[in-house]
Image (tube, rainbow, N blue to C red):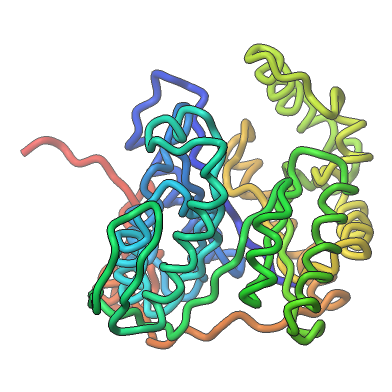
Length: 376
């Protein structure tokens, strides 16, 4: 099994400066590479309380400071974007990263961002499908002639720069809809189940549907590839310690839901541990739970939250270290997965090159990837 850390760059503290939150995101990406995670992902949202309106910019910065880890979008909201502009941004990022980019696409969520881009409930799925069909061709074809409903037509159009990966792997993010599942199956693309809001059953049903449609479109069932999310993570040496530490974090989340008028699906931490995808407990409890989910999903990739989510920096690092030392090795052994693509270029950051020993960490100033400098 492969493991990603993913962030939507949410910020509940309205007074916090954006640059501080971005510093935290980049430092978490460096930590992910240091600890041996397979990928780091940045979501895309265009509304409060998220600072994730520009994933290609954030991931380009991460690419410059890392050399190994795969870079994911989670998700790229193609229903909102011009697919030509999205192609240009991500093709640039693919080159800068040495071919480490992977896309997870989806229509996106949120009424505010749909209003910002003039997308309606009636056309969002058509926009997502049409944008992906064009985006896919742009990645594969040096010149494209195309006509659709939602952007101007193209006549023998060239797009630059050409990407490094030919083609890039595109996952389709799915939370509740059969439309995104069918689109993934139709093109023979992998599926990434959000798996964060509800009990396991609706997600398992969508994944079964994906495999059915995969076969319907004539693909080899053995080639289907599934990833799945998690609604939270905290591991400690004992279950009692894990629950005691995570309870105030979960209770604060529930209070926030109710404050904005959303009744939580799992009102208590115990209920969430029992029925949701949240991973809170001892290493063995978490290993057992991932096995139970794998029996339903057959997934080969899993994501954890990249953010501390209320943990101290020390607690956050310690629980990720525990994951990599005791949980990940068991899951990699028991639930083998296909390898991720190998970077096409031996990408090394400019900062790492100046360090002398080839390491990013040795080149970073004290305090992380960002350090405030006195005014000159």
